[in-house]
Image 1 (tube, helix red, strand yellow):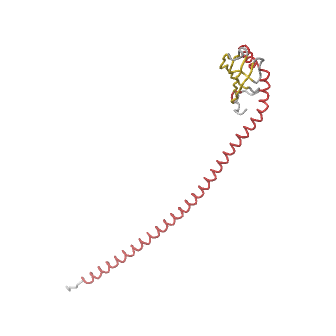
Image 2 (image 1 turned 45 degrees about the vertical axis):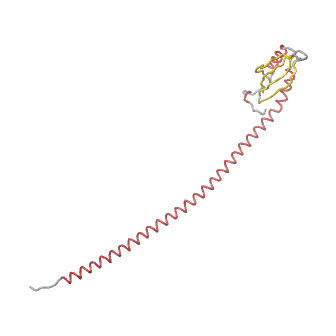
Image 3 (image 1 turned 90 degrees about the vertical axis):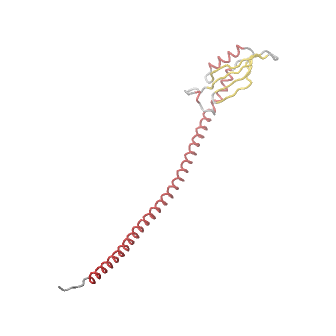
Length: 191
């Protein structure tokens, strides 16, 4: 049997396979690098485009916020104008009421009653005055209750005044009533 040395041939084949393996490994590394670069580029471009969209949305949201603030401001102005218009309308409607109330007050105050001051808060009236006698105060209250636009609420204070002529000092609370209105106690404060 002939002896053939196959080691050289095997060694060459092993070296060639090793060389092919390293070339394949190098090519795979390059391919992996290219794939990574492509994926990274695609993702970076997607992130960049999403950031651009987000920036656009933020700008639009800021504009909408400004518009909403302007709308709220206009609504507030509208409400204020409506309140002013209601107040003016209430004042225009109550203008003749004050005259009628004074006319009625002239008819209600009996002889012997001297009103020194009166104060009005909304529809509540407070009369301060002097009367010759206590029955005059009672007559004043009865006439006020019989009146169409005035109603007594309470007689708060009655004092005898001993200076000079004998007189009765009094403080009387009353209410101004507007005929035809159901809730007279809840009328506008400016009437």
